[in-house]
Image (cartoon, rainbow, N blue to C red; front, side, top):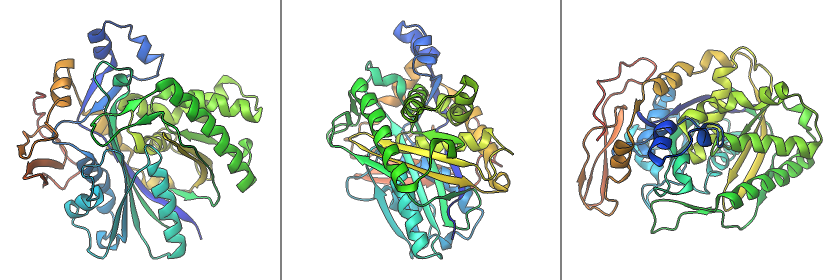
Length: 404
């Protein structure tokens, strides 16, 4: 029985900060970002956008194509959770009005949690083929202002429907994984922004790739030559390039630059202009591959390397299913990106510093133009609002709100 991704759709915010604007503000050469880390823009969430509204915007177009009451579980992966106790998935469950006969749980391990949720969903469907599971990977990457991480922010959510007989990707049994207790990136409970040792994290990422690859080959018997396209976790696109160079060197493969680029670049296009989305970034990369290589992926094997700082890593593969093009939502992805509004650095800071996370009561000015928004916090309770049930594929966006 084939099990895997039947539908996939991603969302991002309505605003972005260009790295050219950022570089001008910091009096730095823009090529430090365009070339050095391979990033051009980063999506910035307004105050009334969080992982729940991003997730709802990602999931709604999937639910519109099915009987939503058939969703038997929501597995929500995030490291930008909105509550230390209540799952972000339950907020999402209510916002999307899913059936009460549904299990919901939140997954956390840095950027790895999305892959963990996908693999668990796959196992659940193999155990019970009647399951239809909604996997969400959603995050808002946020670092302190004036740190090296500030240029690598971003946000996004990916929703995936996991079923038997999937129309997009059949996940193959067997994977390689690696865990090591390290402190390369972390966010203590009392902080709203992450701490990172960038150079050390890069070193641990690449070592984890080599270790997970070795385990993968032992478990599956597959080789580098068996894989057509490679998707990596992308905190910034230069990292994916370093990862593929490391893997090519480890296996002793000989590739032309054109072959190297063909295996990896299509999966980096969206990430370059959306920025880091932590647990979602690997799957935003997969959407980028699907959307930019239409008509060329039938029966191709795609690999996925998930890395979560701290650290946990996994390497696994899937086969793209014939006819997958018919169910892609490429237009929605590209419309969302094209309709974003550029922020000045001052407007970005206004979003960044609002709201006061310790506030008991906050009423949010509408700036999020998506179909779902965080309306207010009332006596510490988050209250969400459904603005519209249309989505980017067929909606006409309202007039842009001012970025304040």
